[in-house]
Length: 394
Image (cartoon, rainbow, N blue to C red; front, side, top):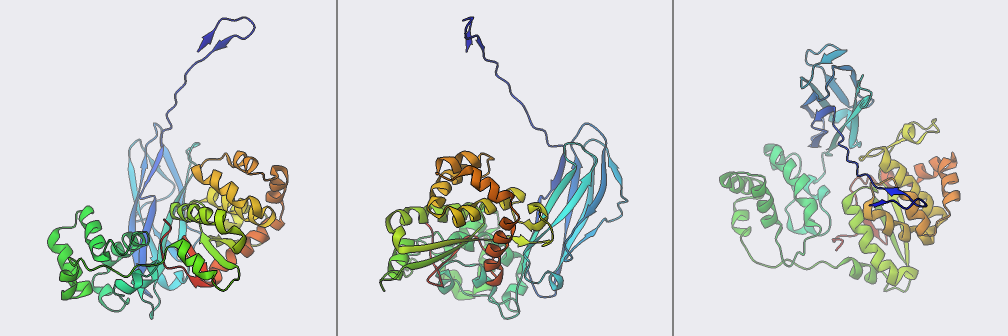
């Protein structure tokens, strides 16, 4: 839009820009899923120079003791030409991993635009007495998906089981159990991942037994589970406030869905509910007064920063929390959180002062301790009156 008015001259120039990735790492996250006690696993990682210049890789390290790196013959520092690749191996040791669920590998380069690349390493160690399939389930899926112990059939079909546990069971939480069967969902997801039909049938047979193949085609309805609203209303029957503890990661899309569902219920029953949000992240160095040095989260430093903001709003502006979440969760990964806080009625100046204070780190550490003490790693996890909620968040 142009204007020749001498008092208000306007000339609009449209600009476009393309952000070019100069250092590519594949995969960006090494997911070892579940490990048996004492098990070691290794994956290969590839680094590619996509820049127009020579790339020097100075170091490949990990600050986590359960993560080890095998340079596989590479000698650092290493120079890569344009489009040249280098590979190395990342391993995890379940014996050292214990209850931790993720770590990082840091790749340092001389590229001014990408001086450091962070590779996430994730996984979870099963305890010897643990029902590994049940540990991934949300809701009463545990009652209609047979449990698999790590020492039984899961060991025989561990690669397939890892896929099932990581990609199917979580999706069942939002499934109306009276309208869909987990076995059908299992088969459907496996089909979408191009597993041959005969292998799917054989996998189902070996994991669940011969009768399961026939059962997977059954149309028998499953017992209905109470909805979130019904579960909360049931908790209010004694006339006391319902105590809700939500464990979440602020960037987790499933947690955003849970908060949206709770927002609607809070609008109606808020005076009868005591809701607290606890975040899932890792505490690191206690002596540092820097957020980045003190904490880490699955979705990186921006998630840690957002977690802290929400902890402070919950503590000092509790009546504004869901107003803030309603706005912020529309586009959680943007940096424009201040506008959301301002529109929600939060005192922005005070909030920024709180964020900069050393006491905020201690408050954040105390918030994280709840999930760490209860060994909760799945986002979202909801407890209603100290009982884990067993349904979805529609």
